[in-house]
Image (cartoon, helix red, strand yellow):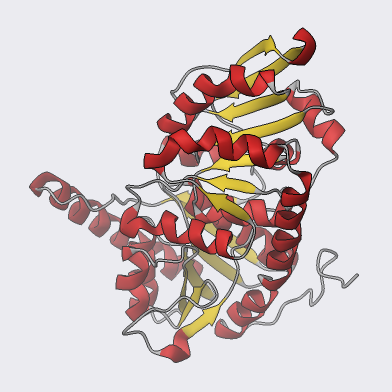
Length: 375
């Protein structure tokens, strides 16, 4: 049995695909270890995956202040020292990183120990960690048609973002019942990413009564430390009660998205990958302060390929009208769903899995797992 080490902690957007890749590799008969940070979000997300092996690695994001640079350097050096010892003991076939501050130390350690290393960038603007670490990697997996200048083209492969096995479409009746919603009402889900989005929370709170008057119910993921779970009703058509729900954190994203006709969301690559996989249209509001404005690029690509529309943060006054128009137009949503299905078919990760095995010079004990048998 071969082992693969995957670094992907620090944010839900890095950790969720790391878990998804570990699931796929385990389906193919391999062992995996996922390296995570000590942040609370990592502990929250990993608590549901007791059958996976996780290890914490020291690290800190780069903040351009004297104290921030000193903290980054000291924590990364501690992580590098730990990673060298860990990799010497485990001798994995491949070390793979999904970006973020947990990736740097283990990628450099793998390179120093002459273990093949690979990187996966899910955003359409490669992040700093990927750009800097690409020189150490034998493979860099990128979204289709994304370039990485000054990197040997022979290293580059195009690959989709893995999603966890649990991200599968649920029957609407079941998904709505779990959230306390009416499956017969049109539903909008508001997602702010793993940390929440204050501007989307404020918009949702303000607009909920108006959407209820149109017979539209809402469920909002507010983010940790942004209040507890609430459930309320508002007057709807003919004074019928229309439900709204707020939840600080959702472990069952598949159920949440399956309950919705439309999602309002930030434009992180992980969220978009799950929307594509589940086939639910979205109105994307890119986080304007994301590094290199990568969320704007992610959102623009999905919109260009027909999977949703974009409303900029400084045009939130247009969001309510956009949402109401889409919710009321089943034909427009159907066109988005067709586009999302085409995207899902074109972004298979199976070729990436085979390439990772080739990179590590290992064969899959399970050439076709039950999840990979052609229909």
